[in-house]
Length: 378
Image 1 (tube, rainbow, N blue to C red):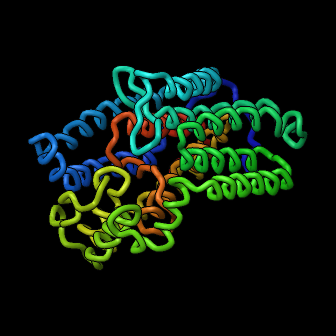
Image 2 (image 1 turned 180 degrees about the vertical axis):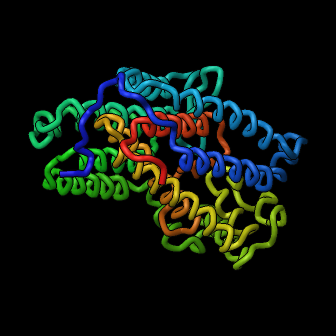
């Protein structure tokens, strides 16, 4: 089962150039994200720091560092990448534990998801990559044994269980959903029997029912999702302001820089809810153009996964591409109130230096894998 049963190649085989369309799409999305960071953040930056370009300048620095990182990672040999799979997973687990250490972990909005070690970042971002790399390495190693419980389920379930428990303690439910879905997609491509997906889906639904039944902030978010106007000044406030921004943009938008909701009406306007400002200023036409760029990036990623002459790399590319697609879908779903509110950023657009560095590093991994493609550019 799956389309990724590809033969490994000798490391001495001549490599191709990195995939130019994928590189250009990545840089274009990053550049557009920078432009929208400036437009969406200048009011809040002026209010909080006195410098209207504060967030833009910080993101610009990380973008330049990330671009250099992308090019450097694109030259990494696949053999080294495979050796780093489990160290990256181990480091991510250590960081997830450090979240709970006083003085290192940082709490925000009732959740402890950040750690500060010189810089602040979410360990869940590293955990996503760690799961992808470790799963790809194990699937590539186990090959035909993936249909057995001992090799195809047990080790993968153990890794996922550790990550899920640590994320739930934060809590960070959106990261749990994204990592679980990405892991499921990789196991599907690896050849796991269908019945295990039915069982896994049932476990996820049961866990969701237990969480919602316990009440707390998760239940309040479901209520706000179903009817934001039931509590317009508290739990429903953010989504109402987001919908105002989207609706006021119309077909062609109010014009770049002309949005109104960013003037401290919409919380997280330069972060998780930046797509609402995109819709307000660029309209439906601009929003669809950006979604088209994401679609092209994702399709190109899967194209690379299907043509890489190495099973580990093929699975890694498929995992990273699936992760990117899920984050785009969930973020836009939340902003448009299609889904309940979660803390998922929009790749390449949302403000956050370390997250951007990790995302561009992941794109560098795909570019590195594209050098082993069995077909040229399309």
